[in-house]
Image (cartoon, rainbow, N blue to C red):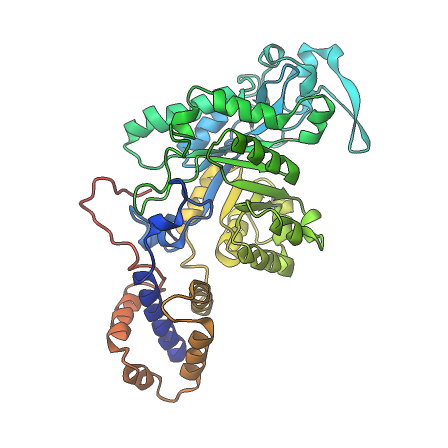
Amino acid sequence: HSSMIICALYAALLVHVTTTQASPLHSQYNNGQCPLKIPKELSTKVPIELSATRRPGLTTIAHRGSSFSLPEHSIPAYRLALELGADYIEPDLVSTKDGKLVAVHNIDLNSTTNVAQLFPERGRQIENKGFVQSGYFIFDFTLEEVQTLTVKQRLDGRSDSFDGLFSIPSLSDIVNLLYEWNTVIHQLQNSKRKPGIYVELKSPEIFLEQNISLVDTFVNEMIAHPHANDLFFNTKNETDYGCKKKHLYQVPPLVVQCFHSQTLKDVRRELGKRSMAMPPFVLLVDKNECQHENFWSGAASMSFLSGIGPDKECLKGMAGKSFMIESKKFDLAVHAWTTREDAVRHLIHGENAEEELRYLYCKLGINGIFTENVDLGVKVGVRGCDDFLTAEEVLEEDIQDLEQQGTAGINGTVSKEICREVENSSNNLVSIVTSGLIGATLGVLFMLSSRKKTRKGMTAIPTNTNDPDMEII
């Protein structure tokens, strides 16, 4: 493996050149908001590189809160997710009869509440996507009525100890929780990390049939909320926190996701009318749609997208590798759904949810995960990939990154050709030395002796332990 090591030394030198000559991070961000995809300069998959300025590269999205442990879409489930270190809490938003947004799994209240016991006569049938559906539909109930209901665990096998204890939260309730966390709790913890809210507008076409626009309702409620400026917008209509502080990544405070592309376009249009800063938009896609031949051309036409949210089935086998290649072409973050420790039969890789998530993160390179086991998402991000990728895979990944950077006169053709020459050379070390790389070789050898792998970007961001604004995040 000596040739592989020396080729890695050269790759490390290229990394040093490209990162030290890169432009300042601030110039890459608009309105002070960090991008949805965490910049590699500010993230790492190597545990020993975690620092005040480098966080795990995996974004953890609490799917309906910490819903493995507590009834989904309840304030305690969202609060537990924040306690466990989630980057985002994720509510599914639907509208009541009187046009108020609440967080519920779907339009039928019966799957997660006691509505059949309190309002037994209110069940009915509707036509939904060509099928007849029976249920107790959210748009038949006012907010006052909905707030009399209590929630329960939806999935069998999970604890029912908390069933009947929590109510359905409104969007306003969830924003209030996030505001309390990012102000009061944030200060008590002396933390620089501020989680955000990752909202899904659920089944917008069904609500339009009820003469309810989820888009208008969402935009109006978000802007009217008394804490909206503090959380999402400042007085200049820019995000109030993000990458304004040099070398400190903060997740964008608000993300909007939906399966319907037109809904995302409509939200963007309505926010634009009000001259508000745009949140990242994420297009959700199921396992059937992602295989459609026109999917990527359709996604490409939505130039404002920041990410794609695929069913993890889209990432199975060779199709998954192709999906990730296409996402990189358009520089889209990939936030896959959903990881559940109790859904072994739905795994696409490995023997358990942790092995599956490590495969998705370390091998395929997803940027974020929707998970109902928030602690698992945080754990996999912090654990990183040092004990997952082989040396050959690390080198291949580094060279691919160099090709994409294309700075300092370096291109992928040159880097690959040099590696080929190193492989074929009978005196590899001499070849490197005579190329004027003695200093870089010695430096990288030292790093290799102190840890298993060499990763890029270590010289891009200086660490100042005396800076009071720096902390482990």
